[in-house]
Amino acid sequence: MQRFGQTAARMGTPDVPNPSIPPPYFLPPGVAPPDAGALPLSGLTVLLVEDSRFASDALRLMCHRSGARLRRAATMAQARAHLQVYHPDVVIIDLGLPDGRGDMLIRELVLARQGSVVLGLSGDPGGQCLALAAGAVGFLEKPIAGLGAFQRAVLRHVPGRFAPTVAQDGKSVPGDRLALHDDLAHADDLMSLSPDEPARRYLAGFVAGVARSAGDVDLATAARAAALAEDALPQLRQIVRQRLAAQICL
Image 1 (cartoon, rainbow, N blue to C red):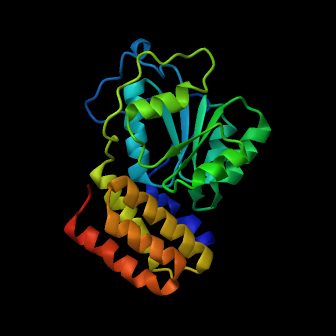
Image 2 (spheres, rainbow, N blue to C red):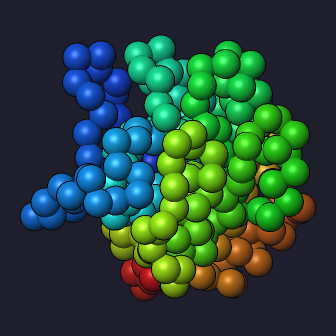
């Protein structure tokens, strides 16, 4: 598993916490900051612990449209580095991370009693029980149902906040095409390392989460098969490479 953790940098460049700089908005090029006072999550800082660039990009857009500031960590180690520098209002933790199980980080954060709202995140609906048992106050299933669902999941646990202006639910916010390509390229790299069983299960879970976020049923099915049997891994890699070659980034 160590070598898999070492390749986490391919997932994009997570934020490096700096105590002298407040967490910024992450905005698409040419997009101005929102009118914070008119948005339901204005003034909140969100730390997202998520290894997928594609899923992170969708949540970045949701935070931007809600008035929240987003910081991202791709691993448990990076998340701990953030938490030593500042205390976010909300921490959203994916359950499958390169260097450990997200529910362990949830439990660690809850026991630290830092006052953050802690939410679990997973593409597997069964992850809700795991996240709540670890101490999370809520759970988000990938892909998130819509902007309104995201805002309500946060607001119901933030003291003194109301939700009269949350967005109407609709289609989930799409991630960036380049981010999806990077996730698939990263998965292809990991498969070239002849992963052992724990690493294979992490890899399969990672690809399955990306596939669900992208709405790619065939890729999700292949990932589930690879999680159960090593001999299904070549088929998964073939499909990943087909997606890369065809630039299918939905």
